[in-house]
Length: 357
Ligand SMILES: C[S@@+](CC[C@H](N)C(=O)[O-])C[C@H]1O[C@@H](n2cnc3c(N)ncnc32)[C@H](O)[C@@H]1O
Ligand code: SF4
Image 1 (tube, rainbow, N blue to C red):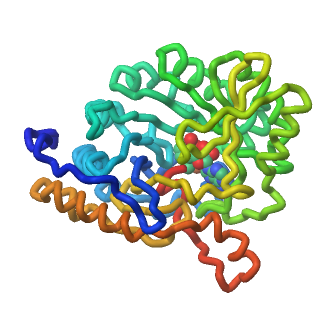
Image 2: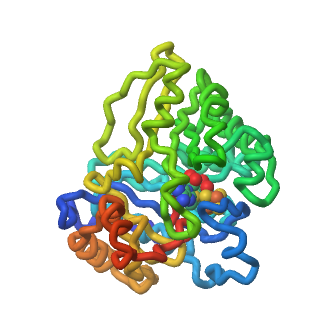
């Protein structure tokens, strides 16, 4: 493993700001581009067939490379690392990577927070090992409690009970917080908003409703399928009184509300109706080591050449730093402009399953 004494001599960088004055605070690290689901909004079955050119094993970064990469980001100011995919729990021995990442500390000496976004299918069997390895928090994607709708949305026939067991296991072993992400697609699962809300009230699990986005895999996206956060919140408020909670960090993607009756919190991620590019502090790295500055970016920087055993960590950090300083992406804020003028469309964007959510 790459953790050596030279950690102490790693250069101390001042805050790294991009061209829009946004600091680098979060790393989304994709560990695999494969998935056992075929959610039509992300990996539609007719595109992601068995002949699809998924990354080969040899193209995936090793755990040593990922650790080296993570240390570079932490040296530049990253405080949180979210492991994603594809489906991250399909990556063999993922707990070994987590164990190394969980030892990283920020420059102020705090532990780097390690979290994961998963579809939850393998969580029941993996939760304890993940917790023991140092995973702090987990977000589970769950779009429906109705089994028929759930199976239609994963498109591989996995019943919702499997994911619910995963969520229960995550809570039981003490992963905290456990959150649920629900992408709302009008006409598909908007009937599930209240069942999901009521299932998780008083459970300690915070549900975050996400607006359906026009990301890379979502070939069939149209704004008629988007149910805005305002509408979702209005529906919840017909049954439960909510009050807004102050955001902990400007870069938090969700706007949170608390139930006035003390049943917990619910969040809204409004990437379409209210883009939050101005506060985005996230860098994304795909499982093959490509740095993407935005979920909607079409270009990337290959970091693999700086991840080898002989590569100096300072050079990796300088490479990331110089890329971040040039960063000016704010694609979500430009969405309306792009749709008004089709000539400005930049699709296809990168696949969500490659860079993670
Ligand atoms: C790409 S997945 C990767 C992690 C894991 N497979 C999962 O589903 O949680 C990360 C998140 O992206 C969300 N997502 C994927 N496609 C989306 C889209 N078109 N619009 C909004 N969210 C999307 C998923 O619902 C999920 O919560
Ligand atoms: S959203 Fe997650 S679970 Fe669904 S297809 Fe994409 S990567 Fe897989």
